[in-house]
Length: 152
Length: 229
Image 1 (cartoon, each protein chain N blue to C red):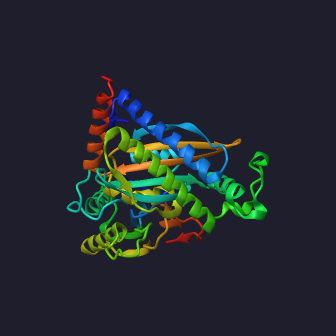
Image 2: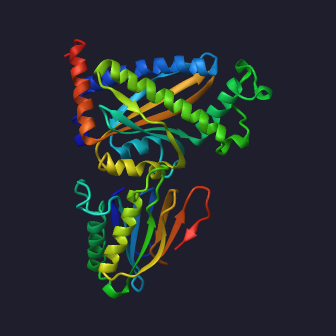
Image 3: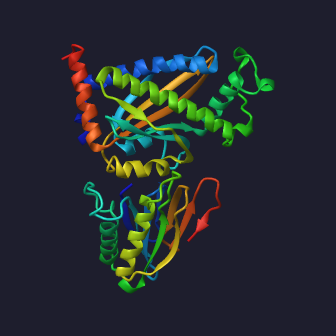
């Protein structure tokens, strides 16, 4: 949780047991350089959290992007995919946005601002997810308990 | 273990273990009444550790589990989880069905063998859930009462909400909001046995930042009051 990695083909990065957390994957489709961040919170201003760069959406995307560009990815080839942001427990009289949904909205907003196209997502719902990011194909494999595997 | 190692000294942790041990003794009495047979309780393991360490104590973050989530109210605010792994859940359900289940399935517990569990018990059923809810009520109740008796903190818990999924998925919202990702939580490993069947559950307590401090101060005070130091 709250971790991130930037690497390139042929590596596979995985992140297990996502509930309200969201995985953001950025990928340079041409050079097969990519990174994955396990985001816990929507923004730095929201809550006071420790100092890990990947914990919060705004910092996480900035750090990922920086990591990709440092490995000489080209800005215009970078695309994004999102997984997670579930609401694991629901209460009848609770109409507020869950932290998972806040994470997703915040990340989408940042991607729009950074002009990174969002080309795949599996978000929301009430179930947990595990993700495998294959850097050679750029595919994200999403697994959940009792559900068919999804490929983004 | 790093910054939270100093949260409680080894002696203070022992004091917390002793409180939880008394709670476990009371749990045995409650289980005995519910299951109507002799229930042995093993001294619980108690640890104060980071949420990540707690998850790796149980398995990996994608471990499938069933949990009962409760909120704590009163002097200590936060969340409380009772977690049981799938295999243990099947044992527990079987055990309870033997003891208080349907009349045609009721068998003397002395004949009870856990070797060949029917596969139907591996999947989640409504009965499992009510049994598990009841057990989480009992365990949360006895441990919070033990803390109350020693530390003079009034802690209540809400009705449990149940979930079945990967362990970290169930916990990550509480880890994020209450524990800020790193703040220590309290892990209690409960083990009880009927005849030769053991059932293991884990209780995880996520106090909010202020509540953790209050809880720790109260444990230190109580230990001094009881003549240690």
